[in-house]
Amino acid sequence: MGYLKVAPNIDTASPQFMEDLLNQINERIIKETTREILRDERNILRDERKQAWSPKRTKAPFYGRARGNSRIVSFQKVVELAEKVVDHLGTPWKESKRGRPPQFSSKKLTSALLVKHYFPLSFETLREKLLEIRLDCRKDTNNRRGVKVPSTSELHWTLSKIPIKYLQEALRLLDDWTVELHTDLFGIEKLNKLGVDGTETTCIELEEYMSGLKKGLRRETNRVNALIRLVTNTVCEVKSSKKENLRDLTKLLKCRKKSKRSISQLEIYGDGAYDAEKNYEITSLNESELIVKPTKYTKKKPRGFFRKQGHTTFSARKYKIRKTVERPFGNISLRDGNKLWYKRPDMRQKGEILRFIAHNMKAYFMQEAWAKVFKNLSQDKKMS
Image (cartoon, rainbow, N blue to C red; front, top):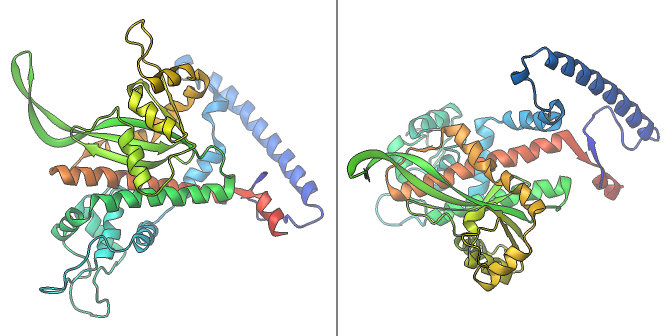
């Protein structure tokens, strides 16, 4: 399968296509070589501690261009993607036929809340953004009277009413759509490589703790366990709570299987914290492979039938790509400082999922941007 950088001045159907292509490649090589020489000469002028450790590896022209294209996304386009998700999933709850009919549409309110952490936004800032794009959240859009955008308390009430399972399915759906975009351009290679990792998020509430027989106050934390697709940098599954077990892979895989998604023929990478018998067992029984760094507490052989097999087949060469599992956590920490501004435990869980939904949205737009940078030549051959 071949890929070509998109160039509007090249006609792939022309008889001189290959000649024009080779000329442009030669011109590009000359320009890049010249820039590389000038960059190296300029780098030598810097202080030795401030020089680039590897000019070739620190430079990523295609990634930079795609990332630039993915950033040129308006708030309106993000809301449209959220509306597409909600249209596919349906209403988050059944509206009661008793009492006064609701003024706002549950689907439109849900679409607005799915983009809450895309920038990120508070409820007040989210309402201002909705007013800027003139999004009409009412059920009856023909009525000229009435407020088109609900208050911040209404938005908060809506988030408390949306089920956690609904948000988790929205997260999975964005991952599926990102995979479809990636497959159309690059194929299905390495899409079965997943990673599992956990982290702790700082909350705004304070809690008491004991240290050296002395009481003190510290910020509460919320634990997050996530299953990540390495190629697309999307999050497939998320489990979060104050006491979430960050060494348990079984919950994530069971939730994924319950959502009618396959958990077989996968390669799952994790650090030594996931070196447990039950993690090896669920992957082995589903014809998947768990690649985890063996943890040796004593000189004795590891216990457990499946754990022994995992230690025997462990590949240090494969394990090197485990570091890419930490990208989503690093991306989210850079965007909002890894802080969770929710007080109730259930709202914290929903807030965590919304953060990863925003991450998957960015990954989705990144795949759209790749399509602007590359063109799949094999698709043109099939069309011809």
